[in-house]
Image (cartoon, rainbow, N blue to C red; front, side):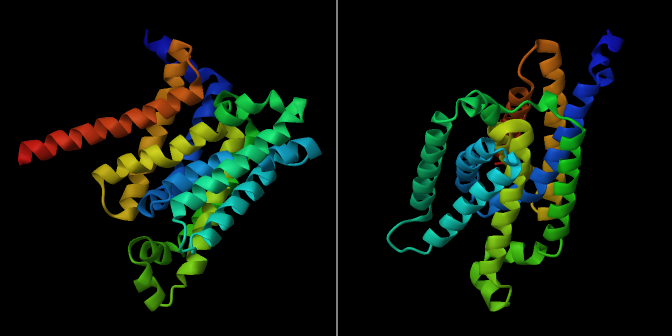
Length: 275
Protein backbone atom coordinates (compact mmCIF):
# COMPACT_ATOMS: atom_id res chain seq x y z
CA UNK A 1 0.00 0.00 0.00
CA UNK A 2 2.79 2.42 0.90
CA UNK A 3 4.68 1.65 -2.30
CA UNK A 4 1.53 2.26 -4.35
CA UNK A 5 1.03 5.64 -2.69
CA UNK A 6 4.56 6.60 -3.74
CA UNK A 7 4.00 5.63 -7.39
CA UNK A 8 3.25 9.21 -8.54
CA UNK A 9 6.70 10.34 -7.39
CA UNK A 10 8.30 7.91 -9.84
CA UNK A 11 6.50 9.29 -12.89
CA UNK A 12 8.49 12.10 -14.59
CA UNK A 13 5.54 14.18 -15.83
CA UNK A 14 3.90 14.05 -12.39
CA UNK A 15 7.10 15.17 -10.70
CA UNK A 16 7.44 18.03 -13.21
CA UNK A 17 3.86 19.05 -12.45
CA UNK A 18 4.63 19.18 -8.72
CA UNK A 19 7.84 21.15 -9.23
CA UNK A 20 6.08 23.56 -11.58
CA UNK A 21 3.23 24.01 -9.12
CA UNK A 22 5.65 24.71 -6.27
CA UNK A 23 7.46 27.31 -8.39
CA UNK A 24 4.12 28.87 -9.26
CA UNK A 25 3.24 28.93 -5.55
CA UNK A 26 6.45 30.85 -4.85
CA UNK A 27 5.74 33.40 -7.59
CA UNK A 28 2.12 33.79 -6.52
CA UNK A 29 3.09 34.30 -2.87
CA UNK A 30 5.34 37.24 -3.75
CA UNK A 31 2.62 39.00 -5.72
CA UNK A 32 -0.68 37.62 -4.40
CA UNK A 33 -0.25 39.04 -0.91
CA UNK A 34 0.07 42.58 -2.30
CA UNK A 35 -2.92 41.99 -4.58
CA UNK A 36 -5.14 41.14 -1.61
CA UNK A 37 -3.77 43.78 0.75
CA UNK A 38 -4.29 46.48 -1.89
CA UNK A 39 -7.79 45.26 -2.76
CA UNK A 40 -6.80 44.36 -6.34
CA UNK A 41 -8.44 40.93 -6.42
CA UNK A 42 -11.08 41.91 -8.98
CA UNK A 43 -8.38 43.49 -11.15
CA UNK A 44 -6.34 40.29 -11.01
CA UNK A 45 -9.34 38.21 -12.04
CA UNK A 46 -10.17 40.61 -14.86
CA UNK A 47 -6.58 40.64 -16.11
CA UNK A 48 -6.42 36.83 -16.11
CA UNK A 49 -9.32 36.72 -18.58
CA UNK A 50 -8.50 39.99 -20.34
CA UNK A 51 -5.40 38.31 -21.78
CA UNK A 52 -7.53 36.52 -24.37
CA UNK A 53 -7.13 39.15 -27.19
CA UNK A 54 -3.35 39.13 -26.91
CA UNK A 55 -3.21 35.34 -26.79
CA UNK A 56 -5.54 35.03 -29.78
CA UNK A 57 -3.58 37.56 -31.87
CA UNK A 58 -0.28 35.89 -30.98
CA UNK A 59 -1.74 32.52 -31.97
CA UNK A 60 -2.99 33.83 -35.32
CA UNK A 61 0.33 35.54 -36.09
CA UNK A 62 2.41 32.61 -34.86
CA UNK A 63 4.04 34.63 -32.09
CA UNK A 64 4.74 33.91 -28.42
CA UNK A 65 1.57 33.31 -26.41
CA UNK A 66 3.31 34.50 -23.23
CA UNK A 67 4.27 37.81 -24.84
CA UNK A 68 0.78 38.24 -26.27
CA UNK A 69 -0.80 37.50 -22.91
CA UNK A 70 1.56 39.86 -21.13
CA UNK A 71 0.97 42.76 -23.50
CA UNK A 72 -2.80 42.30 -23.36
CA UNK A 73 -2.84 42.11 -19.55
CA UNK A 74 -0.50 45.10 -19.28
CA UNK A 75 -2.70 47.16 -21.61
CA UNK A 76 -5.69 46.39 -19.44
CA UNK A 77 -3.81 47.17 -16.23
CA UNK A 78 -2.60 50.53 -17.55
CA UNK A 79 -6.11 51.29 -18.80
CA UNK A 80 -7.54 50.66 -15.35
CA UNK A 81 -4.76 52.71 -13.79
CA UNK A 82 -5.66 55.62 -16.06
CA UNK A 83 -9.43 55.38 -15.61
CA UNK A 84 -9.24 55.09 -11.82
CA UNK A 85 -8.50 58.81 -11.65
CA UNK A 86 -11.91 59.60 -13.12
CA UNK A 87 -14.34 61.12 -10.64
CA UNK A 88 -17.38 59.92 -12.54
CA UNK A 89 -16.63 56.22 -12.31
CA UNK A 90 -15.21 54.06 -9.54
CA UNK A 91 -12.35 51.65 -10.08
CA UNK A 92 -14.69 48.63 -10.07
CA UNK A 93 -16.68 50.18 -12.94
CA UNK A 94 -13.52 50.80 -14.96
CA UNK A 95 -12.29 47.26 -14.39
CA UNK A 96 -15.67 45.80 -15.31
CA UNK A 97 -15.90 47.77 -18.54
CA UNK A 98 -12.37 46.93 -19.65
CA UNK A 99 -12.84 43.29 -18.63
CA UNK A 100 -15.95 42.89 -20.77
CA UNK A 101 -14.40 44.84 -23.65
CA UNK A 102 -11.18 42.83 -23.71
CA UNK A 103 -12.97 39.51 -23.32
CA UNK A 104 -15.42 40.41 -26.11
CA UNK A 105 -12.57 41.38 -28.41
CA UNK A 106 -10.83 38.12 -27.63
CA UNK A 107 -13.94 36.07 -28.39
CA UNK A 108 -14.38 37.91 -31.72
CA UNK A 109 -10.81 37.11 -32.71
CA UNK A 110 -11.18 33.50 -31.58
CA UNK A 111 -14.39 33.12 -33.60
CA UNK A 112 -12.42 33.93 -36.76
CA UNK A 113 -9.62 31.50 -35.97
CA UNK A 114 -10.69 27.87 -36.02
CA UNK A 115 -7.23 26.69 -35.10
CA UNK A 116 -7.30 28.66 -31.85
CA UNK A 117 -10.93 28.03 -30.97
CA UNK A 118 -10.12 24.43 -30.11
CA UNK A 119 -7.51 25.63 -27.60
CA UNK A 120 -9.95 27.77 -25.61
CA UNK A 121 -10.32 25.04 -22.98
CA UNK A 122 -6.55 24.96 -22.54
CA UNK A 123 -6.57 28.75 -22.16
CA UNK A 124 -9.03 28.50 -19.27
CA UNK A 125 -7.90 25.35 -17.53
CA UNK A 126 -4.39 24.66 -18.80
CA UNK A 127 -2.71 21.29 -18.31
CA UNK A 128 -0.38 21.22 -15.35
CA UNK A 129 0.56 17.61 -16.15
CA UNK A 130 1.97 18.76 -19.49
CA UNK A 131 4.64 20.98 -17.93
CA UNK A 132 8.00 20.46 -19.62
CA UNK A 133 11.58 21.43 -18.92
CA UNK A 134 11.22 24.74 -20.81
CA UNK A 135 8.16 25.62 -18.74
CA UNK A 136 10.08 24.97 -15.53
CA UNK A 137 12.93 27.17 -16.77
CA UNK A 138 10.44 29.95 -17.55
CA UNK A 139 8.99 29.72 -14.04
CA UNK A 140 12.45 29.87 -12.48
CA UNK A 141 13.37 32.96 -14.51
CA UNK A 142 10.05 34.61 -13.63
CA UNK A 143 10.51 33.87 -9.93
CA UNK A 144 14.05 35.27 -9.85
CA UNK A 145 13.00 38.40 -11.76
CA UNK A 146 9.99 39.06 -9.52
CA UNK A 147 12.04 38.47 -6.38
CA UNK A 148 14.81 40.79 -7.55
CA UNK A 149 12.27 43.56 -8.19
CA UNK A 150 10.12 42.91 -5.12
CA UNK A 151 12.87 43.00 -2.49
CA UNK A 152 14.04 46.61 -3.03
CA UNK A 153 10.44 47.74 -3.55
CA UNK A 154 9.19 46.16 -0.32
CA UNK A 155 9.04 49.45 1.61
CA UNK A 156 7.29 51.40 -1.21
CA UNK A 157 4.82 48.52 -1.70
CA UNK A 158 4.10 48.44 2.03
CA UNK A 159 3.53 52.18 2.25
CA UNK A 160 1.36 52.20 -0.88
CA UNK A 161 -0.78 49.33 0.43
CA UNK A 162 -1.54 50.80 3.83
CA UNK A 163 -1.14 54.58 3.50
CA UNK A 164 -0.72 56.05 -0.01
CA UNK A 165 -0.66 59.61 1.38
CA UNK A 166 2.22 58.76 3.69
CA UNK A 167 4.00 57.13 0.77
CA UNK A 168 3.67 60.41 -1.13
CA UNK A 169 4.93 62.37 1.88
CA UNK A 170 7.96 60.09 2.22
CA UNK A 171 8.82 60.64 -1.43
CA UNK A 172 8.21 57.01 -2.38
CA UNK A 173 6.44 57.98 -5.62
CA UNK A 174 3.25 55.93 -5.23
CA UNK A 175 2.32 56.41 -8.90
CA UNK A 176 5.43 54.63 -10.15
CA UNK A 177 5.16 52.09 -7.35
CA UNK A 178 1.63 51.25 -8.41
CA UNK A 179 2.77 50.75 -12.02
CA UNK A 180 5.60 48.49 -10.82
CA UNK A 181 3.09 46.40 -8.88
CA UNK A 182 0.85 46.14 -11.93
CA UNK A 183 3.80 44.98 -14.04
CA UNK A 184 4.65 42.26 -11.51
CA UNK A 185 1.02 41.15 -11.53
CA UNK A 186 1.08 41.11 -15.33
CA UNK A 187 4.21 38.95 -15.44
CA UNK A 188 2.79 36.55 -12.87
CA UNK A 189 -0.49 36.09 -14.72
CA UNK A 190 1.13 35.82 -18.16
CA UNK A 191 3.69 33.23 -17.13
CA UNK A 192 1.35 31.12 -15.04
CA UNK A 193 -1.46 31.18 -17.61
CA UNK A 194 0.82 29.65 -20.24
CA UNK A 195 1.43 26.68 -17.99
CA UNK A 196 -1.71 26.11 -15.93
CA UNK A 197 -4.44 28.22 -17.55
CA UNK A 198 -6.21 31.31 -16.29
CA UNK A 199 -8.46 29.70 -13.68
CA UNK A 200 -5.70 27.85 -11.82
CA UNK A 201 -3.29 30.78 -12.11
CA UNK A 202 -5.83 33.10 -10.49
CA UNK A 203 -6.71 30.49 -7.86
CA UNK A 204 -3.06 30.08 -6.87
CA UNK A 205 -2.58 33.84 -6.87
CA UNK A 206 -5.41 34.50 -4.42
CA UNK A 207 -6.34 31.45 -2.32
CA UNK A 208 -3.01 30.68 -0.55
CA UNK A 209 -2.34 34.37 0.14
CA UNK A 210 -5.84 34.90 1.52
CA UNK A 211 -5.47 31.82 3.73
CA UNK A 212 -2.06 33.01 4.94
CA UNK A 213 -3.52 36.38 5.98
CA UNK A 214 -5.80 34.47 8.36
CA UNK A 215 -2.88 33.11 10.37
CA UNK A 216 -0.14 35.74 10.00
CA UNK A 217 0.19 39.52 10.06
CA UNK A 218 3.72 40.54 9.07
CA UNK A 219 3.97 40.61 5.27
CA UNK A 220 7.16 38.50 5.00
CA UNK A 221 5.62 35.83 7.25
CA UNK A 222 2.40 35.96 5.23
CA UNK A 223 4.36 35.39 2.02
CA UNK A 224 6.24 32.41 3.43
CA UNK A 225 2.98 30.96 4.75
CA UNK A 226 1.26 31.53 1.41
CA UNK A 227 4.09 29.70 -0.35
CA UNK A 228 3.82 26.77 2.07
CA UNK A 229 0.06 26.55 1.59
CA UNK A 230 0.40 26.83 -2.19
CA UNK A 231 3.05 24.11 -2.27
CA UNK A 232 0.89 21.87 -0.10
CA UNK A 233 -2.11 22.45 -2.38
CA UNK A 234 0.00 21.56 -5.41
CA UNK A 235 1.34 18.28 -4.08
CA UNK A 236 -1.96 17.27 -2.51
CA UNK A 237 -3.89 18.23 -5.65
CA UNK A 238 -1.64 16.25 -7.97
CA UNK A 239 -1.81 13.20 -5.68
CA UNK A 240 -5.60 13.51 -5.47
CA UNK A 241 -5.76 13.72 -9.25
CA UNK A 242 -3.56 10.65 -9.57
CA UNK A 243 -5.64 8.46 -7.26
CA UNK A 244 -9.13 9.72 -8.21
CA UNK A 245 -8.56 10.36 -11.89
CA UNK A 246 -9.69 13.98 -11.56
CA UNK A 247 -8.35 17.01 -13.42
CA UNK A 248 -5.02 17.95 -11.85
CA UNK A 249 -5.35 21.73 -12.21
CA UNK A 250 -8.88 21.79 -10.81
CA UNK A 251 -7.82 19.52 -7.93
CA UNK A 252 -4.99 21.88 -6.99
CA UNK A 253 -7.27 24.93 -7.10
CA UNK A 254 -10.00 23.13 -5.13
CA UNK A 255 -7.60 22.18 -2.33
CA UNK A 256 -6.20 25.72 -2.21
CA UNK A 257 -9.70 27.18 -1.84
CA UNK A 258 -10.76 24.47 0.63
CA UNK A 259 -7.68 25.24 2.75
CA UNK A 260 -8.77 28.86 2.98
CA UNK A 261 -12.27 27.93 4.18
CA UNK A 262 -10.91 25.40 6.70
CA UNK A 263 -8.59 28.02 8.19
CA UNK A 264 -11.37 30.64 8.14
CA UNK A 265 -13.72 28.25 9.97
CA UNK A 266 -11.00 27.36 12.47
CA UNK A 267 -10.29 31.00 13.18
CA UNK A 268 -14.01 31.72 13.63
CA UNK A 269 -14.41 28.84 16.07
CA UNK A 270 -11.30 29.90 17.99
CA UNK A 271 -12.49 33.51 18.27
CA UNK A 272 -15.90 32.43 19.52
CA UNK A 273 -14.40 30.09 22.12
CA UNK A 274 -12.23 32.91 23.45
CA UNK A 275 -15.12 35.41 23.56
